[in-house]
Image (cartoon, rainbow, N blue to C red; front, top):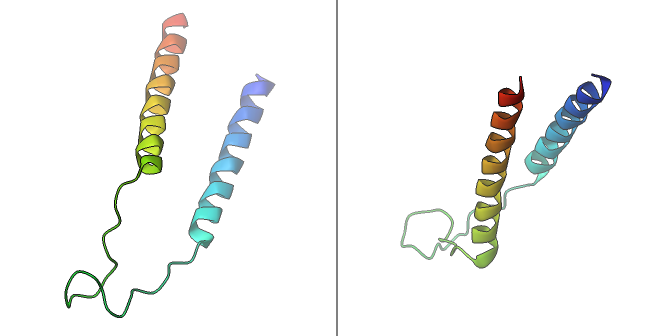
Length: 76
């Protein structure tokens, strides 16, 4: 009982800390001469291997959490 409470509290602290770190990153100003014509904005960035890897890890984490949640509900 106490362990579940501590895990939930640590998860909340981690989520808040992670959100603060992400929000603390500053966004650079848009370039003066964008690559995509006269419309202001950022040039398009290609999707590299790291982005694909992060997407796959995110999907696997979602699947893992749903499977574990179903196992827990079936035990009850």
